[in-house]
Image (tube, rainbow, N blue to C red; front, side):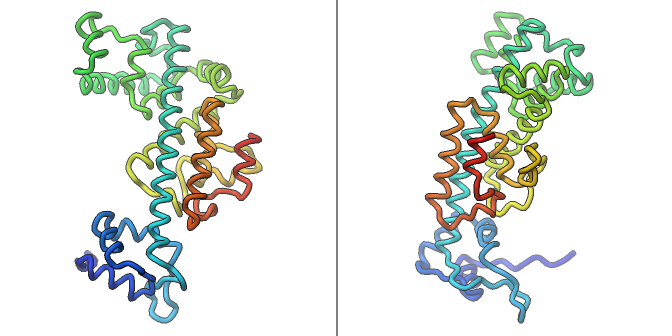
Amino acid sequence: MPETKSFCTYEQQLQILKRRGLSIADDALALQWLREKNYYRLSAYSLTLRHKSPSTGEDEFLKDSSFSTIIDLYQFDEQFRAAISHAAAIAETNLKAYIAYYHARQYGPVGYLDGNHFEDPWRHAKLLNGLSKSLGLRKDEPFVLHHHKDLNDVYPVWVIVEVLTFDQVSMMYRNLLPEDRAAIAREFYGISSREYIENWTHCAVVARNIAAHGSRFYHRQRVNPPARMPKPINSYGTKPFGYVYALWHLLPIPDRSAFVNAVHDCFIAHPSAQLSELGFPDNWLDILTVH
């Protein structure tokens, strides 16, 4: 097996950064960040600030690179993740509400138990299995207890969507009958193509997971699945901007401006962050107004 790098103390980590040409104005502050954030985690925010030395082949920082820039990029990503998390939470709540209302209207309160109301029997069985596990994990919550003790374990669809995770309810939507997926897309999202809603909800789940686990959006080379976008801007679908685009479309109209403002504020508050490092086109504000 290849050898791993040797352990370094915080002070040694600081010296490595200095040796590679990083400007550090406040050693105490830098040491605090190394201690609280982890050298490896912070180093990811320096990727755009360094390159391989042509003479030694080792990493070295570009001229005028500073630790304060790394902090600014780190804080940008934190703020950006918060904006994504908030938008995704709204999208999740809406999707659950739309599915519950539509499915109960079409097939009755417990019509979700009938596999004939879904496209793929195996995925339907997987949904019910996941639901059973989720109910077990949340058995002490008042609304679950109420349906367990007082209503003989009968859980209407408007109850079960509150137990399902965003991922589960997104998969539930993608397994509804095609005509039902299309009807929800038209009635609640104003979109004629169900394929867009299927993709955007999947993207929203992935974006929420990235944000929830503290992963990095800045300088992310690719997101998967790519977001579906109109042909003229389809190339941005593989970038974080594609997920912003997807989330924006899933939001109720009154929430869209707040989301755009929250994302815009990230760039205003942290001038070190570059639009291109998240795959944002220069006219992104216009795109999220026109489309």
